[in-house]
Length: 298
Figure: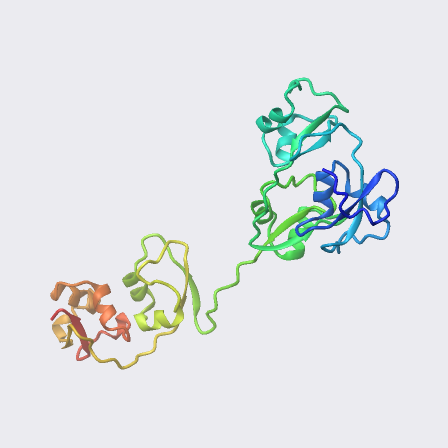
């Protein structure tokens, strides 16, 4: 596990030189070489733990424990340790630990006993930014600082023990969801049972209004919980598209107990959604007596 390729840096006795690589943090190095962040800082008194640079040469305290196979590192059993807790801490499994320690009794671990831990920590996917834990940090204080919740931090860092943050440890700060832009209207969250026609009738808006406020949303595939922008209705002129015919609404189309657009859908054997789609400039409330509208398939 030692890296002597940069031995030109003079290091105190009992330590060796190491060139920092991409992704390295003091916490990761301490874990990899079975030491602590504090011990690394002790042999690097001028090192800024929050500004470690790629290619920078630092000193790492030597691990005086027994050698472990390649791809593993040595660990000293502490009071209260179990293989399960150790496996969880180092993002591995009890089975993998037993594979590289064939002679240990998992039910009789001894304080001070040296075992080998698989060093196969996967890269952390972070949809946001990385943060290096500092002295005094807690998940609560970090969450408050970056305007997220502790639950969101834990979700983004499933392998982090919230009660045992380590100085130098790298954690992911999830990106805050940006509020949907809707300066001239209001945000509406799709409810169970909502459909395009229901939304148009509920807010008396046209498909054109809805498209204008939601240019990147598939209006035919709205999902429960999805947020959309409801803009005020604007009556815009629009010619009837191919495959439709103009129709002047009659007094008989307005019985009073039903919306006119629903009456027309039944009269012409079509649907409210189809009528609204060929009249993208109209809101349901625009369907009034003497109004010329487009009817699909007529």
